[in-house]
Image 1 (tube, rainbow, N blue to C red):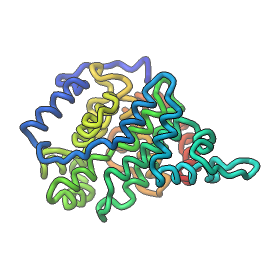
Image 2 (image 1 turned 90 degrees about the vertical axis):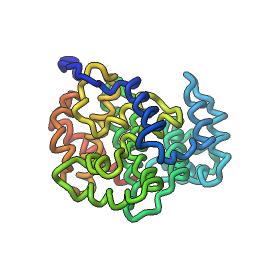
Image 3 (image 1 turned 135 degrees about the vertical axis):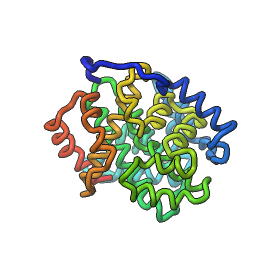
Length: 301
């Protein structure tokens, strides 16, 4: 965060308390009543509890990983990939070996992604490569967090993974949302979420925040996902600085992903890059360095 940034308090600031109140009211009486939020997977709740301690419970994490054959296989495949390959060529054959090679934080991140993908499957032409791009976004956000003081790479990774989770939830819950996605992506006269709200009186940022709240995840995560298209709030003094940093880092991550994929700049980046870079206190030269360093990470993903 730029310590010299002048923060301005704006009316109706979307603080954590305000966001929670809005979600509760919309869930009871408004547009969110029809949204079907899947329950948090039991294994994910156990993983969050194990990782919440100052000294995480390694044995519990290992038990959770070993309780699902496919999740264990995912960890082993990652541990034996070129990124983590043993210099002597020795393969990992157990979950414990995989955890030791990958590291606890990366193990938890892989398990979280696995459990999320299996809880909210995406089988729609409107969301091709959704979880692949979510994984890349999570890696990019974690990479950016490691370049910044004070932002947890674990929190940033989770933010990147869950950032657009409201889309598949809406697709499963709301009639006509697939057509809305096509329209929103095609329009250049208004933001994506403006089309969502015009058609359904809610948007994927709100629904994503609702899922985070329902799953009892970090309140900073709930706020950042709720505000990840509300760039007018960036820098508001009433909102937690960590929330602003997540939103700004997420915008940069999305931009770097699009560059890696050979895609043009999107409207959010074109309109808000200056504010995001100013908040993160980085310049164009540093951004170019990040782009070069991140490419190998995204290639492996």
